[in-house]
Image (cartoon, helix red, strand yellow):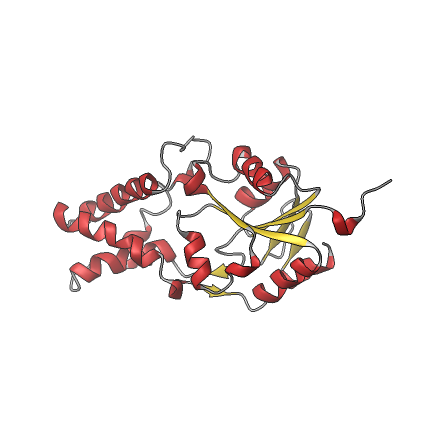
Length: 234
């Protein structure tokens, strides 16, 4: 006899930034704000910072094993990156070190994020449909704390964050870990806005993949321009 749908273990894994919420130049603007807090009159611009932000994060090289860089070690790795950027732009080493460490506090400000209008109603709808929601994100270790301060913590069962695990999407190890955390769901979806991270990784892990805030499918099982459309297929 087939297992009743209402007693199945059903999970939805959610990307965060770009999926449930959006931010504007989060990392570049935070690095700029940090140095401006020490040198408000310096001539460094957002474009100056941006040119160095397309490499050097762990999720830029997901084929690498970063299990030696988790939690505080992950931040130390990033502090070195930001400090090197400042020094390349002509800032002395002592101020570069201080500014790089300030980026952590700035990044974690809830004001950086705006929830999509239908994020909360969609999360509630998923729960009503018998699913448990999980965050599965390439992100900094304290993301769950930020989500709590955004007042959406209650809609999630658990969090799987790359900087706490040492693998980044689309690595199968991160997805396998996520499924283990969720108790190896009978049905699971991966919802995200990144083809390379969310859709490729979700497919490798045998999840039903949903690409959101896009107008083309990029080989996802479903593609929706708005989050609430997910409720039609779960």
